[in-house]
Image (cartoon, rainbow, N blue to C red; front, top):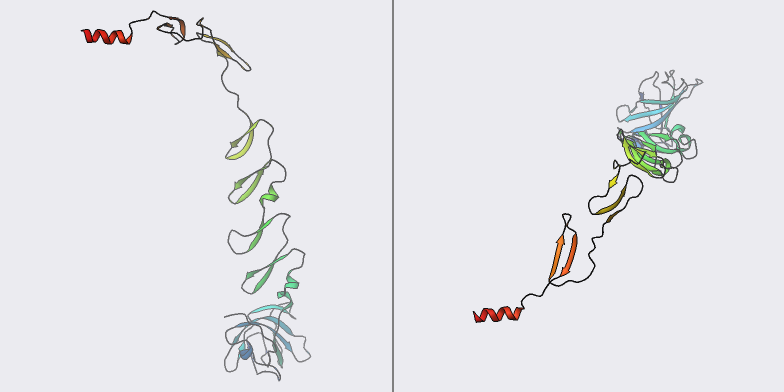
Length: 266
């Protein structure tokens, strides 16, 4: 079943009451609903009483090829009965295919920036213009479009940070103060003062000088009295901290040649 509209589809009916219409055939110069719309399809119709009665109805109905052909009155869109189904007085009715004003884009989009979409099959609906910098997305049920905050609409100041305050929900953390650090509070990002360390003092140990309890401190290795230079056959003295505390060149030992000669002689 499909919604079908066609030009110059018009018949008469003598069906009284509020039920399905029996169609009596096309008016001269027009075609029948079965020919123009086809059986099983829906169409927008208008019914107008030819007599002096102020009776009319616009709605959506279903065409059926039968003896006689029929048009059901499924959904009333507007009518002389406060937009409800009309109980027609006996007489001749004009029945024709139409396009209701409420279904046109011009009547649906009433404000600049409106977006048109289908809220159901063959049912136009209006989504009002969204807030500046918002983006168009599908709702969580995937049934209709909706406006949602965009990163540009959330981050309104230099230094802002974007995060998720909930599932699929953008939120902004305003920039913090200088020297603050980013942390979590109950699972949400926040700024906090930097934590001060727990070192209360630096003491110079053996072989070191300097230290202190505040500010920038420096440790310096004590001099040992050993002069910088190259030593041969060196005699060394090393303290418990691994520092060389004394160094001097020693006496020459046997030469390599003498050692070899002695080995040959023996």
